[in-house]
Picture: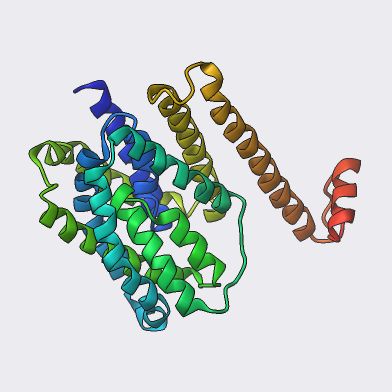
Length: 308
């Protein structure tokens, strides 16, 4: 087994665990790491073959909520089809290095938005959903990633947990089906891509049940946030490396991107866990004896939460 194949096994195991826990995240974790070793033209077809049954499974498990959500996500699905064709043509026409850089540049703000917990409900949901589907189709067909922006959109619109998973399954099954058809017509399914499947499939068999068990012992929001942090660092490293490889920045200054992403992510993590600590402190009953430092007491006072 080569070093790149070994990294692919470990990465897909982590990604499958995340997918089992959250219902999405397989490609958004696998692609940023695997793109450091493989081109989009080789990696994408293999991931699409994996995503087809994976998304079908997510949809089947949450099929009871499909009648509640299908009308709301239908505009997004309609917008997918033509944009998938555009994205597939980009994979063929653009230099692999520049395509990777563009992929990472699009992913980074989406990951950071999700890490920051961005929420702003949209009133014109159908019209925006159609445009959103167009952008999502291009992104997925170029990168096989759509989890972060799709999760931001569905959470932003107030989907309940079960409806969220059903909507996610519907859109992602549609985009993986459209992309598989477009890749097939473009002749992108090759023996080299198929050669990655033996390293990916065992990770799914082990990782998905592991994620389902794990999520019962960890807060879903904490688990999701740590995964987003991992993605942010990988994408930051990928951008810095590609800036040097493509001679955009020749010196070590290229890694200032990684440093900036790291600092921002550390700050977002601090804010996230501090908010959780304040919530936990506010939830303690008045009769419980809990030591609260003066610093935490002042923070609770500023947030309007009663001290325990």
